[in-house]
Image (cartoon, rainbow, N blue to C red; front, side, top):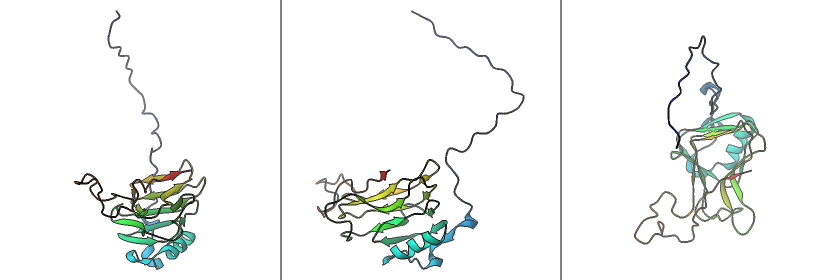
Length: 188
């Protein structure tokens, strides 16, 4: 039938092996971060921050988004080395409002946040809301390379997002125009 046993051949090491590289790349040092509020980005949940955030991306490598809701109305396109850092994915969000033009009708998916092909991008501590009634919206189109990072990011949007889908009528939201699974990211 066979046997079971234990084989133990241990020998003492003269030196420790070289450490392995980290499995998750570290974020840049905080002294390299640029607070987007110093660049004219409001994050107040009312102001359209699309152009201000895009300008910040074009001119700075590492951006820190403090707590807030940053309204966007078009795709934010990262440069190949852009790093976006938020405080917490529920407290720091990029928000696409319902019925945003350009995300309506029939057509290919359109991202709220786009990381270019082969980039070394990183996003951490952010929420990305696609809204509930934006049929073409996806949270993130991530085409960045092997050294890129998505860490501590929450994809929000669609029917039932942030509410209890297990209520008594299983709708979780009284607005039945909102789609289920509207927050799916796309990896290119």
